[in-house]
Amino acid sequence: MLTMLTSRPPVPASADADLRFHGDSELAAGLVDLAVNVRTDPMPDWLSQPLREALTDLARYPDPGPARAAVAARHGRPPAEVLLTAGAAQAFSLLAHALRPARAVVVHPQFTEPEAALRAAGHPVGRVILQAPDFTLTPDRVPDDADLVVLGNPTNPTSVLHPASAIAALARPGRVLVVDEAFADTVPGEPESLSSRRDLPGLVVIRSFTKTWGLAGLRVGYLLADAALVDRLAAVAPLWPVSTPALAAAQACASPAAVAAEQAIARRLADDRAHLVRRLAALPGVRVTGEPTSSFVLIEVPDGLAVRDRLRERGYAVRRGDTFPGLGPDWLRLAVRDTATTDAFVAVLAGVLS
Image (cartoon, rainbow, N blue to C red):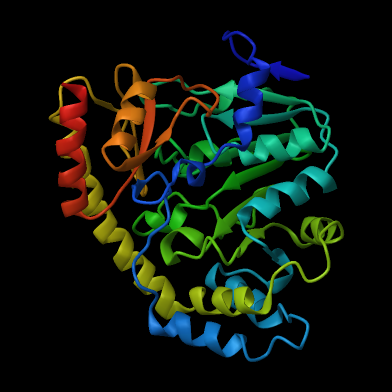
């Protein structure tokens, strides 16, 4: 059963099944990928070298200690407040199995895996639906008695960056507040990140190395929380959930040199995103939602699903938006790519729309 915390009609069963639909389902051979929000540039030597070395040491069971310490140092926390996971998605599954919320609430539109994991574990889930065009978060929209609240920042698929103060206002004793920061490192300086906050009760921050460093196939992420909650989540995790190569990647990506590099990448991304937004804004019938801040842009176009299909016919994969609660068939999510790819895509989109 799904408790709706909005005036919108209940979500039909077919839409519920789409919670497990993700951008990689849009891909096919020969298509230019604008559907998956993972950077595809060549891997730097400081990352590829530890991965190669890790492949020579696979007879031993994985030792998470060095990677855990590196991630902890990156966020100014003790290692006991870090749990490494097989991708950020595993963190949502651990939360769903370790916690017993009386009233779980997911703030949408956002990445659907947290709700899917909660429901798969048998928890009723309520939704708070933020409204277009800005998808502004107001803390009073979340019910006072919600003891588990999940939201993203910056949010997939809207690319909205919520103020840290608005999210922090949701924290309170007796509530677990889960903030999905998988795309936080795509924002220069991470101004609204809560990853170093240790003063907020019940705060859980989930992060990933996947997006900036192109590691979706390696499955490496982590969560940050108080040590007692980390222990509780670790107790329901499988043994050795993160492989030796993934741990080597985590240790490398948490280093000061990597953090400096990801910030330079975020600044270049901001320029590429601005170019994409300008080009899209010049097309009649295209609405860019709010002020995008991450590696993707959400747009609204007439007859969006048909536009998506025609783009596929012309060689481009984009992410349908109607599988995100709160969005409909006219919404499409576009990954930010280099300016040449953007220009070629916008020319095709203009033809499709005309």
